[in-house]
Length: 147
Image 1: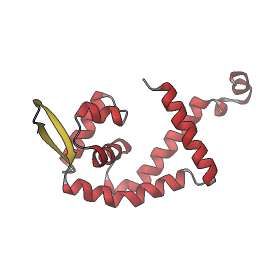
Image 2: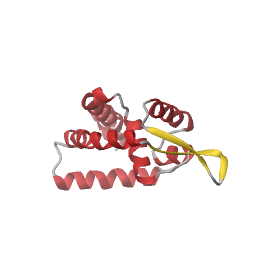
Image 3: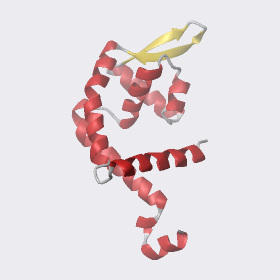
Image 4: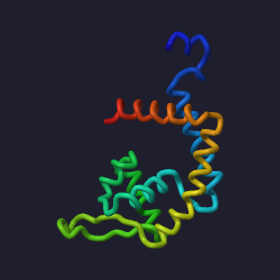
């Protein structure tokens, strides 16, 4: 693979391809959801909290693969928009648990069709079978490289 990549250029390097696909995915997301002023990380936090709240900041960060500083900023921005609520953990008063406000749940419901549109546009060139294969291969790589 390395020899072929050197002969054919960087477009055949998996790392370069993944970086470029990330750029494409973020551009599609930003273009489609521009009016909502939301980032992919903020959406990931909302979607995760909708399924698994209440969560600590550390648990949320781990689930959406964000470091401590990044998830802190995500939480601050979602809180400022009124989409996230923080409550004290009854078992440990020093800890706060995160969940969605009713406004956060409403926004998330409104975003679902737009998120689906982004995913469809990103994967448009692939057949249904190729989409399943792409998903399986991405998950396999992520599992292998999980910290």
